[in-house]
Image 1 (cartoon, rainbow, N blue to C red):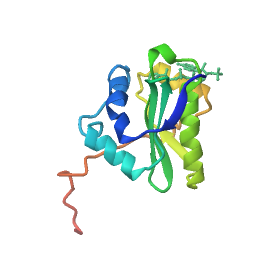
Image 2: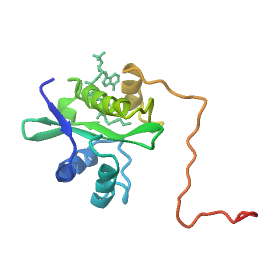
Image 3: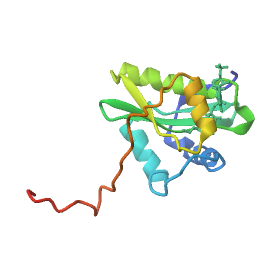
Image 4: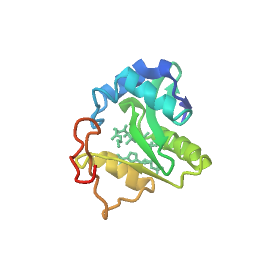
Amino acid sequence: MNAKVRVMTPRDYAAVMKLWRTTPGMGLHAADDSRPGVLRFLRRNPGMSFVAFDGPLLVGAVLAGHDGRRGTLHHLAIAQTHRRQGIGDALVARCLRVLARQHIPKCNIFVYGDNTSGQAFWLHTGWAARDDLRVLQKPTAGSVRKCKAC
Ligand SMILES: CC(C)(COP(=O)(O)OP(=O)(O)OC[C@H]1O[C@@H](n2cnc3c(N)ncnc32)[C@H](O)[C@@H]1OP(=O)(O)O)[C@@H](O)C(=O)NCCC(=O)NCCS
């Protein structure tokens, strides 16, 4: 692997976004992946997200963070031209190392059900599918249920 990996900074946003936009299977979110959204994530999880460069060219990126209990990786993407060179593995390894240093014992990822190639990468690199769990989700604003005791 010739690429250099370093911590993602706010100045990387435009190049990272360009990579994500051109990578199928990213599932970009208008607010979360806007500049303020990504910068907020980086501020909340300092030094945990990484980028890979081939010379001046950004060729890989991943967001990582944790909630004090479990880590989560988002949007791992490697440029088509630079795949199968160990760069994805290297970015993930950096994230896991930082999470472990912060005493986070396990890390989760979310992969779209139809992203078979992404799933194959995770399984090949030692991640285990939790078939006993399902992801449930709810917006935080405007959807609070009227509860009897509130
Ligand atoms: C998935 C992805 C990040 C892999 O990045 P990469 O830099 O090509 O992966 P690496 O070269 O580090 O591969 C590490 C190992 O996984 C294997 N691997 C890589 N892609 C694979 C795939 N699609 N299927 C099976 N194995 C794969 C490699 O052969 C290598 O195995 P080895 O160490 O035994 O030789 C990249 O293909 C990508 O950006 N895909 C599109 C975005 C995506 O799906 N991201 C995941 C979203 S959750």
